[in-house]
Amino acid sequence: MGVSILFSVPMSFRVRNYTARLSFSRRNRFWPRGLQKKLHLGNLDAVRDWGYAPEYVEAMWRMLQADQPGDFVVATNTRYTVKDFLGFAFEHVGLDWEKYVELDESLLRPTEVDSLIGDYSHIHSVTGWEPQVRTPELARLMVEADTHIIDTQSAIWIDSPEDSP
Image (cartoon, rainbow, N blue to C red; front, side):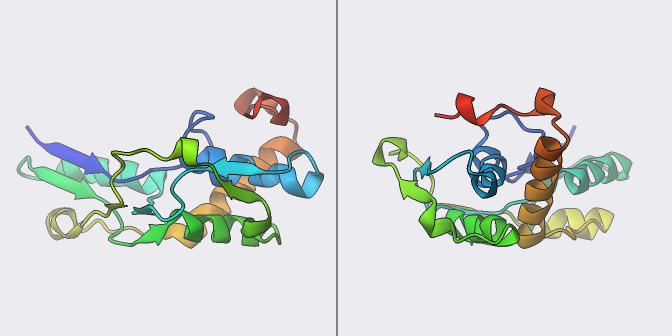
């Protein structure tokens, strides 16, 4: 039997209250259209290792192909703050995140881990897997996916700005 740990996997199809989607992608597409004014977030200095879900699926498939079961960490070995992710996402639509984001102390979690970073060296040595999509590209992909959804009016996959807190 083997175990895998997957570090931060935000994607546009995640549930609407998943932090990265809620914060950086889903709402980002509302601002250029004048549909939302402010985004309230907690710890903007939290450091995360953001990874791309399709690549993580490939990593899991490779784990299953290994000759021996093992314990694997699937991650990117990179460090980006929430502020960094905001910058990448907002920059993609030509906006300055600092004009739209406000710190909301009620969203700070007293037991939050400041930094969550993974090391994929073991899975790489056993299976050859390594991530290709890094955080700046991930933010772009998420914004483009959500923008496409709203542009094609596929509201079945997203909530409306009226539903936003």
